[in-house]
Amino acid sequence: RAKATAPNTICFYDPSMDQAVRERNALAIDMRSSLQNNEFELFYQVQNEAATGRPIGFEALLRWNHPVRGRISPAEFIPIAERTGLINEIGEWVLRNACREAAGWTNALGIAVNVAAQQLADLTFPAKVKSILTETGLDAQRLELEITESGIIEDQRRALVVLKQLKEIGVKIAMDDYGTGYSSLSTLMNFPFDKIKIDRSFVEHVATDSLSAAIVRSTLILAQSLNIPVLAEGVEGQDQIDFLKREGCLQVQGYLFGKPVPLSAIRPLIDVPAWAAEEAGPLGQVA
Ligand code: C2E
Ligand code: MG
Ligand code: MG
Ligand code: MG
Image (cartoon, rainbow, N blue to C red):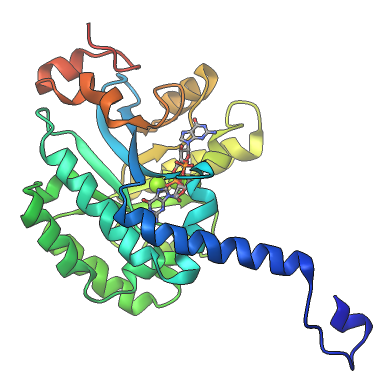
């Protein structure tokens, strides 16, 4: 700003920028100590079969209980972790803890874990995943890694190598936030996805907005022809679930079925044999 108005003046101090940078740096420093002090926590959001409402798995979502600022949203701190490189360490913490927890669930539901672009760019990532599976005893088939377009687009060859190794280990790969990036469908389809998660922004108005409906419908048709199951994110209302079921969407996730909650709150769903979980209602209330 000051530079633009006075090109020959060196700008030493821009209070607003300084403030933002300081805040980010402070958070980055706090993040490191929070990792050590157990101030991160995993929440779990149920994923359901659309037709029956039966729970099929959970997505692990990171929460930061900051000692001073209280709970900070991942939308705020994940980008900072990515910029500072801390994301690899945090991502590994998430993976290890999600796998450890899920390994103890008696009904063996799936566990989905978000993986950042930088983790996927690490050629040692598959080996890390493998050793975490061994260490925690989680069956590889139960683990699904959610990756976004940014995770595969920057270095496509490398991403393909890493994804193929992950598939060999036996874990599943889901395309997260589908529709929000800029890459073409044909690019995305070169990657071995086991699931496509349609972004909440398209699901939100699917029952009332014809453009959203067209995007979701065409995604479902494409995925069906490729035999890839689709999960719709952010399902909040009955009109949305009605549309999705009618159009053949197989899986759903959203506040209608359950918000992300601490582990203790999903106990009724995970500490039961599979037959009982199947009888649980859409909100997962086991009688
Ligand atoms: P995401 O992976 O797309 O996760 C879904 C987000 O949508 C979650 O937000 C979830 O709480 C929210 N959501 C689910 N259903 C509904 C709904 O019906 N309505 C509304 N309004 N929202 C819904 P959350 O937990 O705040 O996470 C935001 C993002 O932060 C995630 O988006 C993911 O990109 C990132 N994130 C969270 N945990 C991790 C992690 O462990 N590692 C990495 N790399 N990223 C993470
Ligand atoms: Mg996700
Ligand atoms: Mg998503
Ligand atoms: Mg999202």
